[in-house]
Length: 96
Image (cartoon, rainbow, N blue to C red):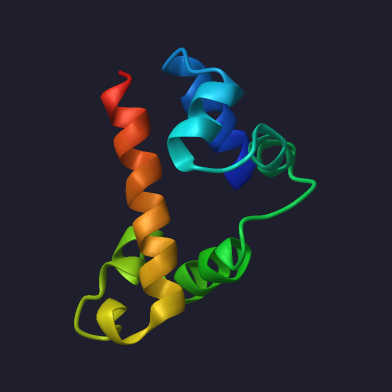
């Protein structure tokens, strides 16, 4: 199974973005992005959320979307992660 950091790197490269460009768009340091891609540091909580989605047998996007079982608006951690995932998706889609 491909790791989250590997997916980020692959998608970033497919869209022709450098680590500097993507980090700048996300408002993080290039080193932080590089660490995420290499798997030396994980995005806070992403591993736990991936495991939850797998256990619950739902896509991570549904887990974060706030459908009936989970309210994104009432959970600041999930809301923050959801916003970051959305920004990452927008950056990657925009650069197709």
